[in-house]
Length: 401
Picture 1 (cartoon, rainbow, N blue to C red):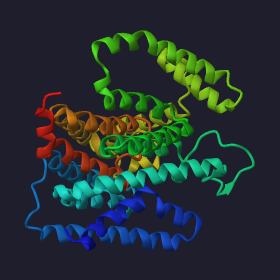
Picture 2 (picture 1 turned 30 degrees about the horizontal axis):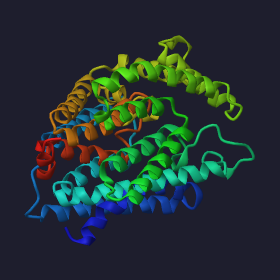
Picture 3 (picture 1 turned 180 degrees about the horizontal axis):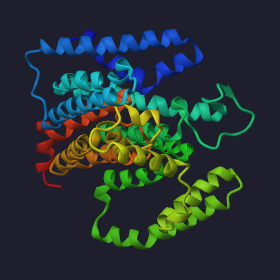
Picture 4 (picture 1 turned 120 degrees about the vertical axis):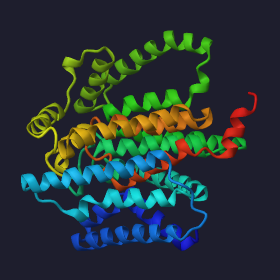
């Protein structure tokens, strides 16, 4: 694809991943923000049209085809529910993730485009981490639109939300681990420093979900470390390390009361003392959504209804929107991701599983996983990565270690 065609896709992705549209609307002009939304929307559509004329374009993976069928069912049943329940809807706003999904499905059909995207995504996510650290250092509050006179309890970065910021920090860690391959001592040292910066960003977010997901991601990305002898060592050392680390955090004079309460929640989760875990009101919101699901379990309540009621749960939000059949179809879609990732070569398997872990677990605590444009791009990228394995990756797995 020519450079102009690449820009049709990469510019909207970068702007979405850095939340530029929302920032422009909040701090500059709402009208300019809307123009920017139309521009990104049009660029992706134009890019998809260009891809249609590419004779070297590959076939869609089975996961992508399931996405297309899912969207057909979701909008078919969801829009019908909107009519039945007389719920208003903004079609332009709700079709943004759909346009990105379809457009990037075409874009990623070229392996060269996927390689370029990996580099762009790596730099974009890392820039987001750097800005998160900077904004936290100056105590800038996205919600208050100003720099505060006291330290923030949790860093929200460019998104004004610690969980969304944690997603990007962990994705940055994964992309750097997989796609940065240093060859000299200096570049290896630099990679370690950059990884340390992303870990620091994750810590600043103070996201309980983020911490737990990051532990799982580390176990997947460093799977080669887990030899039988080292596993035995971890069984004895890891609980002690966690105990002393968490106790140190709880007794620290540097952490605020809110930060210590979140550390205590992690302790309660690890000790299965779930009755003492604070869900930040998400349990109430989830129960409210279940009431709507029970009221309309078959047809649902309409497209993007779950966002309007702040459900903080993507999985059951689909059920609330378009009914149980669409919900079951989405579960099958996730099963496809896990299945394709598990049977992929080791060099790709744990990379895919790490990204999938981030997306899947945060579905339980966030309502934005399939409504954020840049995350839909990651979903499409993951579909191709898990299913279409480059020949060099297969050959590297066949080499003796």
